[in-house]
Length: 199
Ligand code: IMP
Ligand code: MG
Image (cartoon, rainbow, N blue to C red):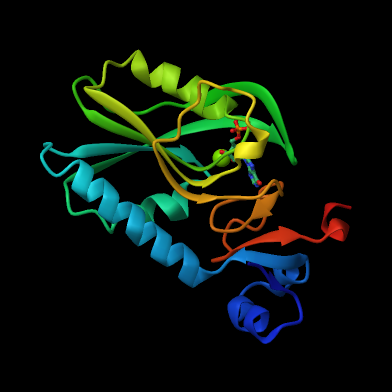
């Protein structure tokens, strides 16, 4: 299901958003309501999975994870610490495969129950590289959670997303943290850009 430009539902969804962004959106794939429902569902699953633990540490990957991370964290009924890592692998719409760590976690993860979270798993380069770095910190457990899984694009067989929100189509998506050249992250829905937006 998607919401194309020019429909009443599209108009309702984009109300209040920057017109400079809205004019470049061709269709909406995930509405605010769909995202909110899915995040609550993931939160309930995680709360259940970790209910007998002392707590969890969410390690989110800047900057795309920020809306998802704060929304998800607020649905959890277990103690949660928030940590971030800054990594870069994308240039425009292309995954470069070269994952650089720009900012590392600031706390000791030894013996902690860690969940690595990101907005989207695409080729898998990022999760594989970051997971490797986190394993070296000796957490008690380490699992991964992404809101979107673009399975078709996977180049790593060994990447495992333990908790997934949506399986998403092989399209470049923006909004709810996801950017194109640092723009569109603040849109509360997730959509696909018109071809003209890339020019
Ligand atoms: P991977 O390393 O190829 O799995 O890519 C993961 C990272 O690429 C994510 O953290 C996103 O920042 C970015 N990315 C992948 N697909 C998209 C997309 O469709 N829109 C925006 N960013 C994306
Ligand atoms: Mg990212």
